[in-house]
Length: 495
Image (cartoon, rainbow, N blue to C red; front, side, top):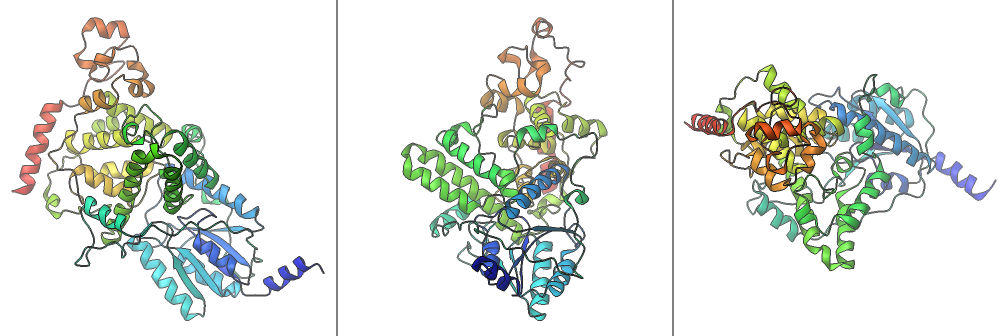
């Protein structure tokens, strides 16, 4: 028998290790996977599609699409290293122990999560597996610093981003990313183990007709896609990031958010690559510092989630519990969701979202503010729509950013800060390029009127082929009146 074959035989005779992949769908810089492969036995790589455990939030439609293709890519990458990815559907608290028993597993490894329901499942599993003689260990991988590592002097968590960022930047840089395992020796699937499912059985893709054409055109899910996107951003976007990040018409942002959300790349990998770019090219220093600040904003949101697990439902500032939100009309919600509010920047963003599963961050703030403050609609309604429509819908960033815009979150924009969608458009999309891309019916308007077509003359509208109320809607609310109504509502909530 060849030496390699003998080694494989001996390894197969050792107890297998389970590596439970969740929001870390990558091979590189995955310490849980590396720990499993470093043992003397074979490896069971598993993913559990769990929407059955108590408190787990079901994925939105765009996230389901991304997850399907991310799992598809991950399975190929594992197979290329002699491994196998086994998929399951159901409660992890039942599947993992049953699989460990059937396989005679000696260990189980995973990357930590920070939602309250997820922590409860993971903690219970650690105890259950330990009682059964299975070593269970979790690893850092989703964050640069754990929530218990960045604390105030009194031991509490930060509620102000600037103070959090100073404390985080004062900590030593995270360790270097670990390389992907050279081989992932697959354990035979044990008899009597829970039934596996095929990727198609998870039913993650849109039903026919396939409505995901825009998602396919805009995105490349998977670890390779994440690496390529980071490399492209460093090459062409990092140097000017501090200024170009606010222009929605430019490809001036990293577009790494969905890759981070599914763990196809780690924040540690990103920081290492940015630091390397800094060392090679001093011109990127300003952009890299600003970009690393955005990575820390993500960290801040996850640390908040750790301390406020109900953030998708409950105001972080309880005084907003008395906010007199309006009951939204079907017309208002349809106009906002469909990009038919009559405010071109808002409409462009909402159409970009529907078509691509993504929206530029500057426009997200304007569109969210419009719903909450112009229409006086509860932020949770908007957060749920973004949760369903965004590929990067994230359990920390999505609710925390909505609470920031609404004024009820940590370090939030004051409620009286109400984005004027006209001024925002004129400042950040001065030529109207972004609006013309997503609201083509306004394409013939001069720059002067592209963000306020209702003020254009009849002649200008006619020459541009625009008929307000027919080819493009009139504003569904007046900005000045909406602002006054929002401030009045805030005053009532504080009385």
